Length: 274
Image 1: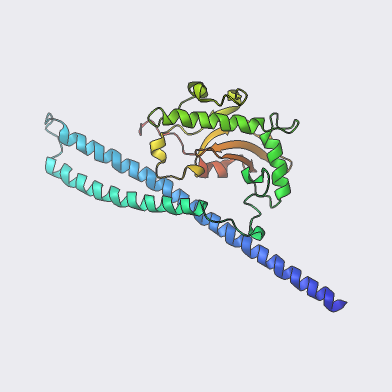
Image 2: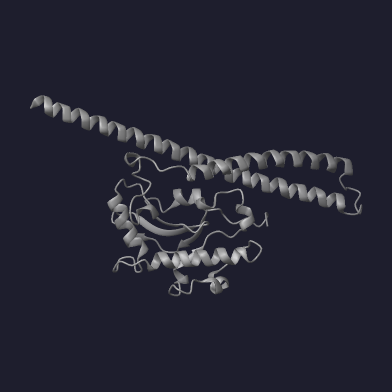
């Protein structure tokens, strides 16, 4: 009997060790992915600056010589050649990194033992939480998807968020890539089969252009956000987000969403960059 009990303990210890190892590997992979996404955003910003500088120098070459302090044409030409080479190198690096990130998101699912934080059946794949429980994530989804959040279960809040995000995306596709500044501009694109969305409950986060996202995986960029967070059963806060690819996320946070938003929100351009 004692040997049998020892055998059970050893087997349980091996299984637990395998689970911990799988989770550690998954955590390291997620950390590397976040680092690459940060590099990608930085490279995109650098590429934009190079493009702006290239345009400025091109304008100098095209302008008539009306100033004694005008930069010599030879200097401008040399600088343009340098900028083109630097921009092309950076563009290749950015494209390769974007492809790598996209391939990561298309990779096969992890084994079940390492899947604790990646979602499970039902609504839990829509949930972002550090909880290891699929049952808890399912509970969080049922709360977050419903409107009101603590009423009878429905998916009205989720449908509202999805409706608004899809309308904003359709608007951008038909307006030279430019997203609307408010939901009223996208009213014509609301789903007719859904109830009228509660626009006052949500806000548009991304104020740029579709063209600015061409080298960034759209599944990592938050497009629409619920205005007011709500308390979760674990004493944290929950909120609905919709990504630029239309995927709904119900995010649970213990730091007022600062960490998650730092990785998924692209701030509007400053006045000097416009």
